[in-house]
Image 1 (cartoon, rainbow, N blue to C red):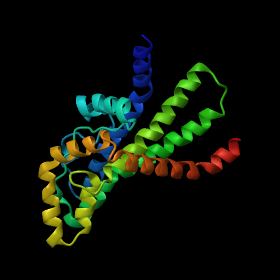
Image 2: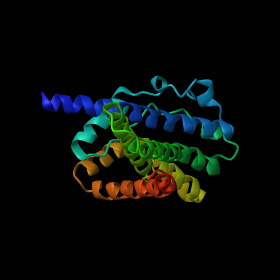
Image 3: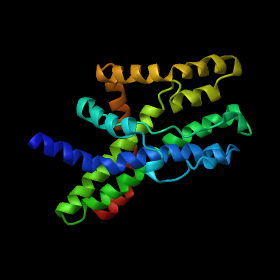
Image 4: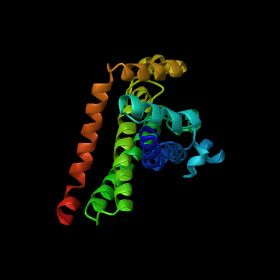
Length: 225
């Protein structure tokens, strides 16, 4: 029963941060694409901040829980926002910005959760307050994990698309062609994390990003201490 309670508590703490980390990540891609000239996501109603429009039952809910209980790195994915790169005003250059918008949104959200964590830490220690403090901590770790994972420079991850946008055309095309094997790439990355080969590097990068949040929020921490 205690294991069941632990699972329920973990779901309760992580559900909101995971849903919004993934949903706002996808919406940010759509907003950036529209800014640079591609209204596809907007036309299909995918610029909504409503998580229901972006949820993939496996990638948004089950996968983050599985990874949390196995390798302690909770990340997942949502239904990809449709982007027609050919409709961007400068496709090769702007695709990198569209790709970075998702991880960028995670960085901003992670910083926001860190602010909430600091504020909640100085409030009276009620049971409800402790719950929201744990949720804020989950929001920090989830968004840091998504920021790091999505910047791995391999298509179809955002980092791969950023690299494609920066490479000369002679190299960009063959590098972008890796995206057709996206399912296998994603599976290989999960396997590498599960076996620990990639896990240590990712955890170190996540800790580094969290350290940036801590540094950025230090003036508030000092003010409230």
